[in-house]
Image (cartoon, rainbow, N blue to C red):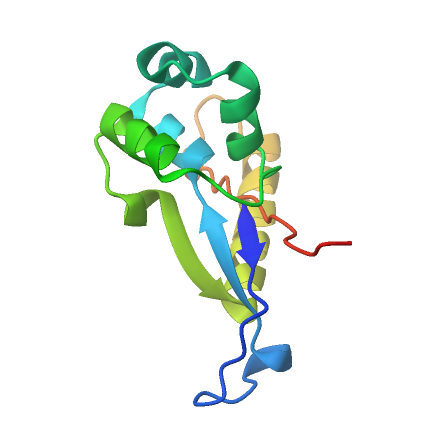
Length: 128
């Protein structure tokens, strides 16, 4: 999931396509790496399935710090492992890598190694 920033960066110019920054929330990827499910997070933290699902699927515009802490405790990670800031170029690279990995998984046989999944979501922070 990625949150789009509307903050200006006068000291850094516009950069790639206007220099838009995004926050990527990698809950899905962390769950896969830790061998956990959303149900594990829900049971351990007491947060509702709807709340965790929205975070996991990029349907939120904000995350309460308490929720972030609870998820990090359960996944034994730091907030920076769960949330990363990227620019548009990096976001495009993630999308390309994700598409390539999906294609690899779709064409792999049982004997083929499959690339690790890149599960990230872009969140639209526009008020419209």
